[in-house]
Length: 311
Ligand SMILES: Nc1ncnc2c1ncn2[C@@H]1O[C@H](COP(=O)(O)OP(=O)(O)OP(=O)(O)O)[C@@H](O)[C@H]1O
View 1 (cartoon, rainbow, N blue to C red):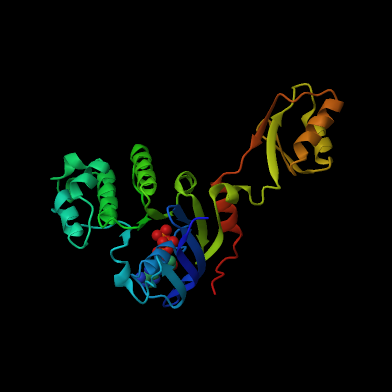
View 2 (view 1 turned 135 degrees about the horizontal axis):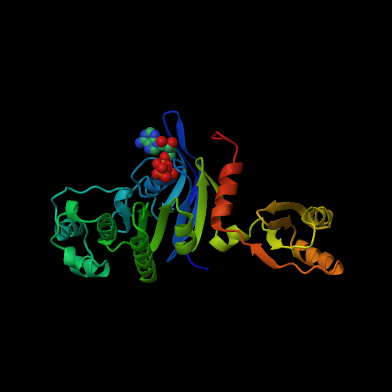
């Protein structure tokens, strides 16, 4: 079992009337990519700003690498790198100047030239920030989060605004950083990003952790309900067949979607349906099982949480 290096318990933070973080508890293990996923305004950024010691919590406890960032943020400065949403730099600063400036804040920084090569930015070293593409600016902000050689890197909205190729390149880069041993906390509202990158993740909604685990665990949770679709041969009267199928044990519902029959039920529904049809001498044309994605889990969870349920 890998070591827990971030431990957050019952975290609370209010801004005036807004309960941004209502009750967040989570653990991040050394060397993993931990995803924090949630809709806009869920409290993700506030949570990571609290764990980085950039804001004061109203309640709860946080430990990062054995340090309480609320009491002693300076003790984390050398060990935690943070890339904040839309980090802004002066328009005219050149890439290498920005990196050297940030490197000067640390006792044992990474070599800026090496970092630029790793991030595919070496041919842009002397380009002004404002002249970089969105993807290059994003890469630079990742480089700035990594220049202090941190043990933990917090990346917020990593690929927002990037084109599909730049997103994939950025994902590959983050995996390389993780493989070098850096623990990564990744804030995102993209399900595909979390599913692809996160070793474990928490879905946050309205300031609370709705669920956490590996992407596969989250998808499997509640998977008692299965779904599949099939087509029947033309000569079979569809409505009667649907009525029959709806009466079978293990089948919960039957619907017609375009020319396909969609069946929802327990995991025994599929064999029950196939057996029933075989008894009638009917062979379905095509059977497709519908797999749940992390996106389905996300939508179910964030939809079923009671509206405005903030403590
Ligand atoms: N400095 C602030 N002052 C007042 N309210 C704030 C402040 N920062 C955030 N909030 C509010 O707190 C809530 C949580 O915001 P937060 O930025 O943590 O959410 P988020 O999950 O990161 O959202 P997004 O995905 O949109 O970035 C929101 O309702 C937001 O408007």
